[in-house]
Length: 337
Image 1: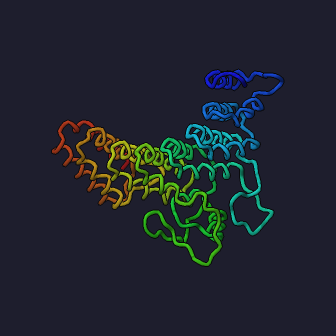
Image 2: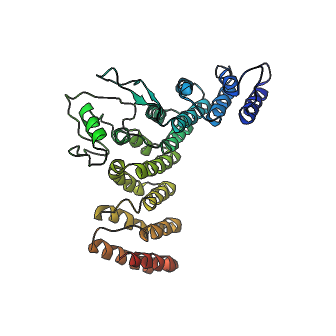
Image 3: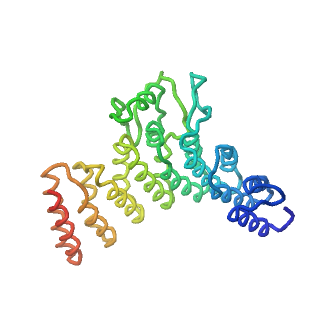
């Protein structure tokens, strides 16, 4: 407690890794005692140690929530990691609802869902590192309810009625919630609104000025799409839109996401035209990624197949060094017919 900042941080790391008892305090209690330290580096190390000292119980939830409101960005990043650890270690734990308008006062929510909402709040952080950490973290949440996932794709709040329908029909289509504009769903003005914590966070993340945040958002959307069909159906348009990003790294992340989802989604004609436009890009790495993806992606119709083949053959004419990769892609497409 009385050492230098560096010494205290190292002592916390050793205590967390070795799980040692110091002065009669168990490792977790010891780490929690440093959460109020005057130095941000010590607080960040303590939160990081709690995240690694598994299992992380629900009793650490308040520490994580307080951490995401800390003045230091490194502390907020560590708090996001702790919230993720709590969610993973307590998938079935329940708690009273937080920050929601609930008419049924006996209702409970999963601790993991609450952690998900808290991490969503970090999407609006002023520091790029925190936003990127939050974007990356969301992809690691398993079993999140479809209504919470869908809320991340729209800035308009889903209503109580819509959320109940989604909860009861998680294996069915979203129904009459038509999209309006980019990522928005129609919502009746007179219907009761629920939690806004997750509203439009991926819309915000994908519009972030830093490409690192946009890449992280695309990766998490891909991982969450593997978990939920309802979310995947809405997220496909979002992923395809990111193929038009000005930064190659973001477009490569979107291509990788589509390839990862190849056995769960089918590209419509308007999606395919965006993909095929990338074949004329000057970036060899980008074209190579598109070739690999086209070799795995199912197409909706013979017309789409013909359009793709013609685009690939034209690609050979424009970029002769791509010939081997294009023939490989055509071969893989042919084997799926």
